[in-house]
Image (cartoon, rainbow, N blue to C red):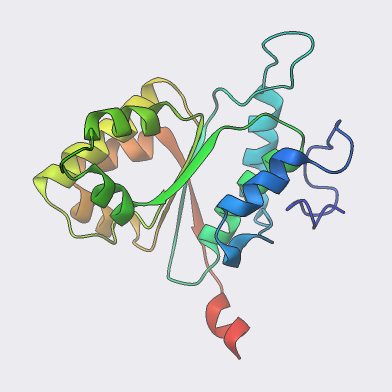
Length: 211
């Protein structure tokens, strides 16, 4: 049952809601197919889930506890080491614990594409919406081509989420020294100040799964 909810046995908060869990079922439709069975199997990611779950608060006695604030993680490691899998596993674990979780997941490249000015789109409104979402997964930071514009946008996003202590899961294939060169000193400084860094090592899971 734990694995079905994205939780390693004995490692995640126990749900106080009956089966099935509608929030998790709805989330499955939003999660990319590759990660619909993802589990938060890294010990430090599992610990983060516990911390976020413990900090969740109910707005009233009849409501479910909501994720509103908490720490953030920076998951770094070479391609295929399981960073994105662990990040989606963390989101699935929070939902599987019966919490009310508003979340959004995007790659850095997709974020920049969505924010580019074009007719009929208000980039500022979109950025404010992503800034305010309680749980954000920002995947593949440092993979997209950088510019002054992307650096400024990333800084605004990270800075505001840091100020308001909104839980953020950031993944990158780059070590922090290379990431700093890619996204700029100002963004890197804010990011490392906001996040606990978790380094993923080991074999390439994608190659192992393809074998």
